[in-house]
Length: 270
Image 1 (tube, one colour):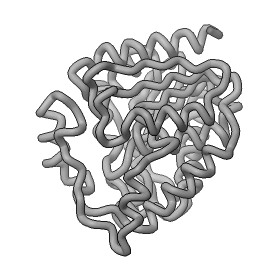
Image 2 (tube, helix red, strand yellow):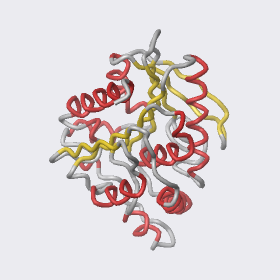
Image 3 (cartoon, one colour):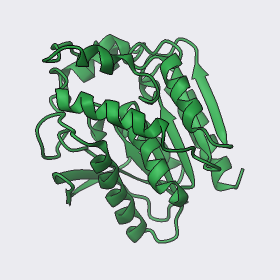
Image 4 (cartoon, helix red, strand yellow):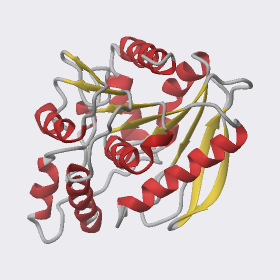
């Protein structure tokens, strides 16, 4: 695997930890945006593929996640997370001036990346959304119906058809295995509504990848959200039988081949 290093910075709500997988002369900068309850360390395989493809890769642990500060999984305003990701982009650009930037977000990270594209899309060369929480995500309204969200942990078996993925997730001490925080659910609802009303991605080259057996973020709900924001340059890849984490699926190399081919096309101007 590609070597990595960590640094910290003061984010909008406290100290954030960032992992960088360096490349001496990158063709592009890849900013990874992880999902709910997890951390950027789960993206080693993705980062390695991207480094070998010519990227310098960066990704932070969001507030309340992984090695970053904050109450666990508490996010009261996702606009703050978008701002933190932008700080990572600014650091990456300072280290590699003039190099194009590609944003890659998974699940909750796909929601964050979609909002990021609405705020900062003019500076991006391409956008990749993997199993994005966007559009209609019934889990939010279901859990908000309770005064105190029930402790219903994510079933590791829904992540991938590869059982080792779920086993590693269940044993990972940096993964949150407890209930949602109500404030975080309310922030999800607010951000989903903000994205729906926030305009399209315009001409930003966008790749949407999703498993058709995704039980955590079902395909139909995300499709409705994509319809709200899609611009003129959307590419869609739906993988039969794949579950939620397509970057960790049994066909992950096929998925990452599609991602890197898409990036090549975007960097070449189509």
